[in-house]
Image (tube, rainbow, N blue to C red):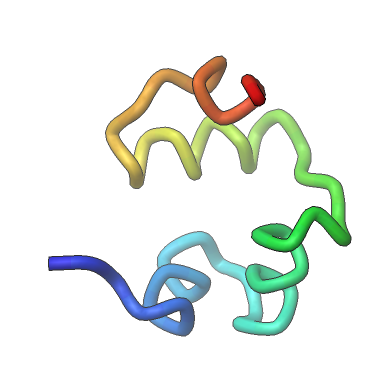
Amino acid sequence: MGLSQEKFADQLGYHRTYAGALERGERNVSLKSLEHLAELLDVDPLDLLRD
């Protein structure tokens, strides 16, 4: 079962619109946030940086 964008943003500590902008590549994410995001997704942080 997937997370809604709003719930996912809440878990990251971001507003839904900011999380959406990250998803669309309109915003940059800090390394600390990237690590947290990877932890939530249960993936290696480097996987989030690959094309």
